[in-house]
Image (cartoon, rainbow over all chains, first blue to last red; front, side):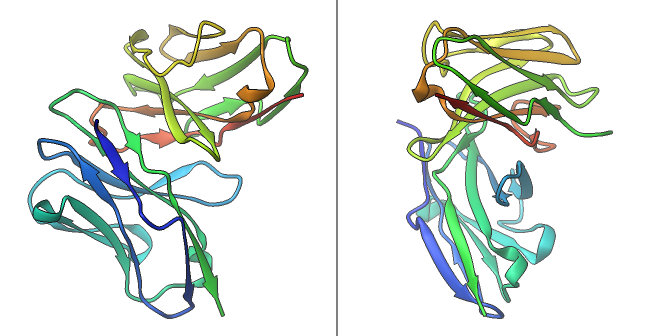
Length: 114
Length: 115
């Protein structure tokens, strides 16, 4: 079955440290890949997306993600985390070949310590 | 544009009552999606519409749930009768395309509590 896996339920990072959030997917063809962020009590905001081309994509708020086909991964990174980055992060996928809508992983909660 | 607008923001109702959630998508977006978020199941797609027509309702949990889109600027998600296990945050999103090439824009959600 098609799925999106975020292996880490909760991660704590010190302010100023680097961050990497993991995402793996299981789809046959190249999917469209997304990262969204959700602050407490808020809706979801798009951080970045990948459809084709350069496998390293830049997003808002200093985030980037790299698509690695061989590993079926689309990990989110940030070189220096700020306290305001504390939120829940969702990886999401569209299987354009199968005609699905956006399917989400279970999310990773990021805490930032001072 | 004011973004995707959902109402109410919070709803508390008694088991057995009818609940109606409302959504106004972004003008010009041809796709509208309803998602449900719970701790146990995460974000689940319930149903989506294209040009006001339901395309995929396979995520609707049971017959108690129904969704309509009478025009391009309004959609409802109705639960009748409601049950405590329906308690969740319900999100509406809209997009130019199902594939999300412009991204899906989400509303702020409706937090439903059924007691």
